[in-house]
Image (cartoon, rainbow, N blue to C red; front, top):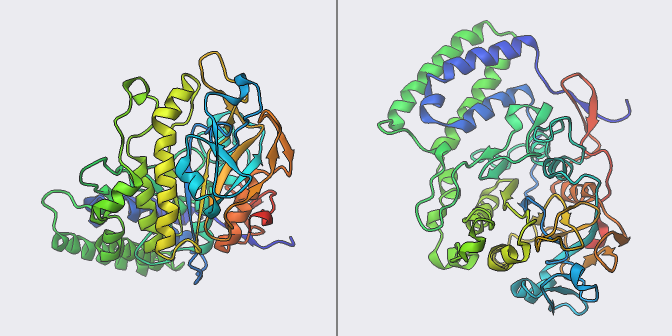
Length: 459
């Protein structure tokens, strides 16, 4: 085999060891503390990732449901009305680039971000599209479950933790199809915040909180019990697994008690004017309120900035639900587009002001676009044949458009690109070697990406 192979998985002994330990932990420090992350970390003994000093990071703004490329990033003002839709167009601060007239703030800073207008793949299913965009591979029989590891899990496995007191891969607020670790194992799953940044109120991540009546001193006593238990089993372990497991348990404890982790997730410490800049949930028209997605995702984006600033390598933010089949223009006008047009520029400007934009690549996209022709319900349907993505920061030069769709926004016309190309661009920014192969549960090797080329036109 000419390519480097990395074996993942575990022996029967390791599985038995992990299962027995899991049962003990439920009654010990980690279970009592409610620290889900610890269960994730202690499995990393199976495959410790290589270390790196590279500090680049990625924020994925995942617009699940499929944002309409025509009504956002690739308007077609010359197309017939049943294709161009209800929105007009507006000039940006980069000559020759037009956007939907629903995105004035994005237009005013077009020089700081770029668009790919010729993305395409073949699957119109939500979860199947998720899998393609997060893994680079087609989905399996159940598209809600990963058969290949997500890009975040790859980053966790290959690059490891940038800082010992924070996870390398975070999902806000919880996993969606495509974001799983598959055969890379539990240790490389995303750390899910579970809690959703509140519209106006305290934000608490349950994984970093102790149950009522549980003090850190008491948890420390249970930690000592766990250490004593491990010392007994370590005497019987000739593989070194117990020592490795103990290191990751210690790391989980460090995260639980780390001031750095507490600060990173403390969204309430942000100044009020910064939180307002990203935006809170506006007073939506009741007709569209039920179709405008989770109410707090503007604040999710702010939390992502805090996490990459603290040292998280990859943060995925769930911005669902862009599935605008019915009264789609109303939903976009009253909710999605005003909110995105406030939060996305706020993130880019915030990263720039903090000196983080050059090291942080921001990718805003969904699993596909929407049909060129407006349907009978004043919306658009699933459409993978051509769609768009917005990229900023990292290696991306602003004010560029890569690729072109045809006059009706139906198919790529020039310079077609794939989700694998986007992933390849992201991986190069992070320093991930895409030629590395990982073994699945049957022992077969699979490269990080099956295909895809870095989009050099963006640099």
